[in-house]
Amino acid sequence: MVMSTTNAELTNRPALASQDGHSTVTTEEVASVVAGIAQIGVACDALKKAGRRASIAGNRITVDDQVYAQFVGAGAGMYGRTAATWMIQHVAGTPPAWIVGAEPLVSLAR
Image 1 (tube, rainbow, N blue to C red):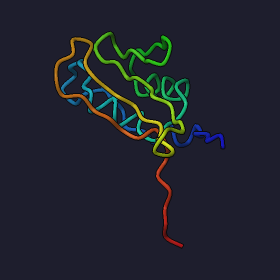
Image 2: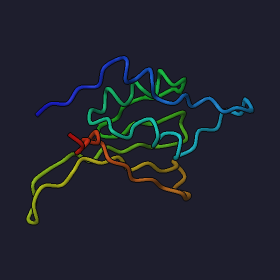
Image 3: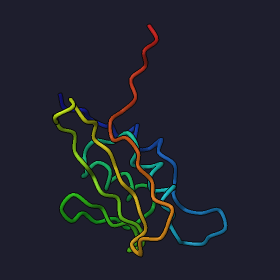
Image 4: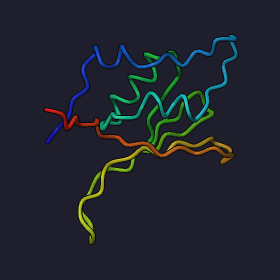
């Protein structure tokens, strides 16, 4: 099943520009934008719309030359299905690192 993210959903993503005008992007900020997006191109566009410079190389998005967001696709393994995730870390490898889901949350309420 192919999930799509609409432009309206991208517009509602948080902006990454800091309140004090400082341009350093954090792993938490990147995680908040890419969480729930299961396509690397859509995630890259969302980061650009949030005001950041983002580029794709393989399964990784580099954000402002400071943060990597690596896409790990879903699959079926020995223990069942694994969900797609994003692993977000600083280029220098310093903490904190974030792991967030790439698939939208589904409401169980009826």
